[in-house]
Image (cartoon, rainbow, N blue to C red; front, side, top):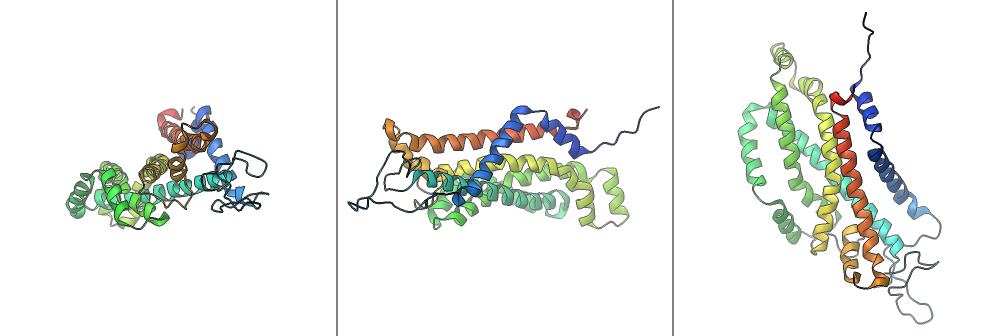
Length: 293
């Protein structure tokens, strides 16, 4: 006689994920990084990332000072504290990454559900998708960044306006494969409201895919912020971000004593990117039911 097995998809997914020690290591790194940049401004002896420090005796700016007890990672070319700017920049870049990933996938989910389920609107949405998708994303980002006022909300809006296309297409394809299954046809015949069919019979099949897509969207959004800032169309210079820090530090690549001003932000960016991609791919493997047994 077979024993009754209590199977939970999400519990099995997390158990499978925990078996991937590399992904778990990177997850701990991201959690630790987020925790640190959250509490860092409240730690003792922290300085403002935007303040310009001067020598009290001479009144001159403390330009490109080496690391010391007062300035743990030295100062930049205008006398700002590099330690404070690096962690403030990491906070802002991660804020951009999480915000863009959340909004573009929520918009993609909403549009994709309508696109895949409401047959009358499928043609119209397909035309809109094809028009927007045929415009190179990089060119669209550059044109929008060039015409709009630089700022945090602007950069988030610019990336969200085209970022939802991939999510919408992915959701639409999944909905099309699910909508005409027997239990959904039976639900429609019995007069079950559309919102109930979608929430109970369709959304559960999309969650793991959307979590994966959101995880991979975070480093992609940060990468676009760095790219736009690097070419001078991103955040204002006064706003610390990984993009601004890398753009400022690139001029010191040939100066050994100041090279760290580029290397540290680049290392943080690389760590964030590799971590999220590793976590996302590990979650994709763990969410496959074939890996649950």
